[in-house]
Length: 191
Ligand code: GRF
Image 1 (cartoon, rainbow, N blue to C red):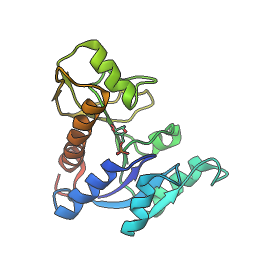
Image 2: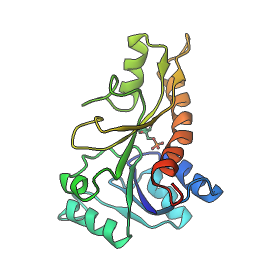
Image 3: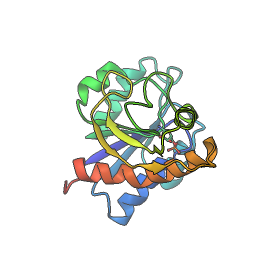
Image 4: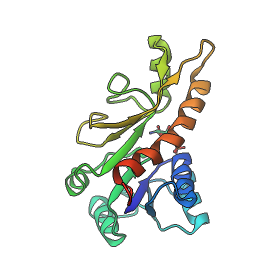
């Protein structure tokens, strides 16, 4: 099973997935890293590790959607794994990979999802709501924001003295352990 990781930022989930593959916990191959951001930590990591990578945006390609599909075919990608990818997913990709595009959301779904709910906005909303449990959710990507079937969730207790930064740190640590498990269970070579 070949998977691609799409990431726009730091790339900590990318690193965690690659580490799980190297430990032998994730029976799959990280075959492509794609980013719209040439300066992302994710691309920096891919280059340093000798992974196949692609910088793709409206500036780099005249038809980025077509180029994306072509790259996925060229690298024989079976599964697309979004990890902090901040660009809209083209309809053509959703059609080409039905049920085979995953995302990790930094909060419980569906309550803390939807348009505009990303990154620290999610943690702020969780803290404001007064719920006891936060935590990341891995779901299938469909045409609607954060609405595809949920494949995994890790409850992370909200502490009395949490602020956005402290909650985000614990949720991200939980993401790093959740994402590879979900992929291995549902899509891994032995899964
Ligand atoms: C993660 O917190 C994830 O929940 C969200 O974007 C963030 C990506 O972080 N979708 P990183 O680039 O993997 O460090």
